[in-house]
Amino acid sequence: AQSVTQPDIHITVSEGASLELRCNYSYGATPYLFWYVQSPGQGLQLLLKYFSGDTLVQGIKGFEAEFKRSQSSFNLRKPSVHWSDAAEYFCAVGSLTGGGNKLTFGTGTQLKVEL
Amino acid sequence: KAGVTQTPRYLIKTRGQQVTLSCSPISGHRSVSWYQQTPGQGLQFLFEYFSETQRNKGNFPGRFSGRQFSNSRSEMNVSTLELGDSALYLCASSLDGQNNSPLHFGNGTRLTVT
Image (cartoon, rainbow over all chains, first blue to last red; front, side, top):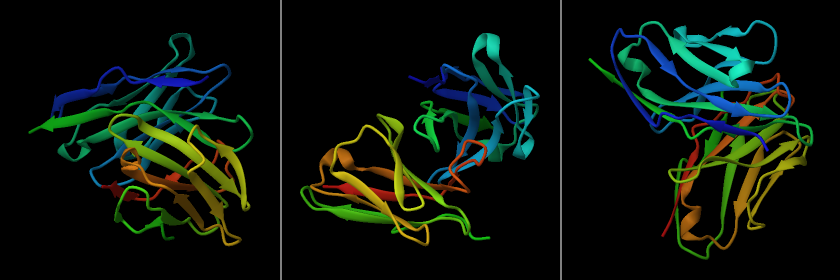
């Protein structure tokens, strides 16, 4: 069965500092990988996705992620964090089991940004 | 283009009651998925509908059910509510339910069971 691990429950960074959120996945085939962000009281917003091709994926809001098959990782990065980036971040892997769309999410990383 | 709309935003119900939540997908999207989000279990997949047919189902008891209408709008129903059903229920739509058409989430319905 597929699974996603986000080892960091909470991360605090200073505004302007760089950010890396870790994500490891377990999946039997080439995965479809996603990063979503959730602000308090809101739904999830898609930051970026990886299906195939270039292993460095650019997303919205200045985020990028790198797919490393050898490490089963899909870490999210941002060179300079803004206070508005404070939110919860979820990594997810997609499945084609039974056709259609079913995501398995990690437990999330809560990002706090210090001014 | 309007996003995914979920109604109501908040619900308070009593144990044993039933509840129906509604989701209107983005115009043109034919796949609707439902997720439950709780602090203890995180985000868990409930089910997915495509062209009025349930295509995928998660590991939830039969008290959780859903349906999709011909206009792609979807409802989910929870019968005989339990305290543990208190959660944020998120609906997501995608164009065709394949992995290359990502999910777009609504803001959720917050259900509290007392």
